[in-house]
Length: 125
Image (cartoon, rainbow, N blue to C red; front, side, top):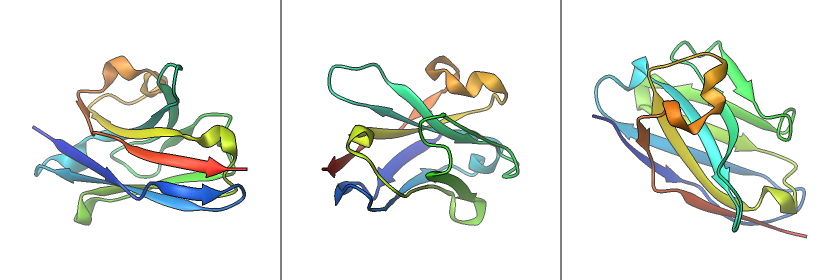
């Protein structure tokens, strides 16, 4: 069983930065891949980034490449999402999720077994 808690969201002006954290409970967290997703009002939940249990492997959505960086610290049971050059279209609730599956399927929500409650990110223009 893994429990996830996101933090770090807030209100920021366009061009600004935020760092989201996903803190996990559970001794086996290091064996899970972790993904970040976001959901804006009236839209479907969409993939943002993912990192494998081996921190050398990552995936990013095209819309955030070169602006967002995902990383993890297994000693702290935490995954981070550094978001730079934020745009108003990045406004959404951001969720982290954990999965034992890795590969291109990490872009899909269905492979994730555990989800956090979400943290709101609002980017003003």
